[in-house]
Length: 141
Image (cartoon, rainbow, N blue to C red):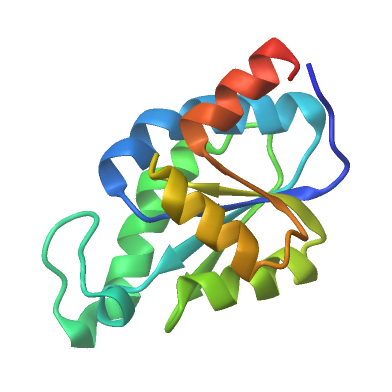
């Protein structure tokens, strides 16, 4: 299994795939001692809801709901949750620098989006879908 020293920034861009892969990402991050940062775009900044409709004035409740959803899954791993207001790409670059991340995971499989995201990050971190990263870690590629 490949081991990296840097943190992993996981940008929540699709709730469906996120929750399905989160357990495996946590397990792999814990086994390699990596810090996991959940970057959570707030519904008012990106215009979509992950866990259902969220009125703009209730973004604090939205963050708490997400925390309560993921906290039980975060076993044996060091982690943070970071709310994002504005551009998820810009904030993922800031978070990658702040946490010294070498990997940014997106909860989407669109290759063009990953390529564009990596370009915007100036290639300071690998950008992969969660599913691709899980496969790479398990196969050692």
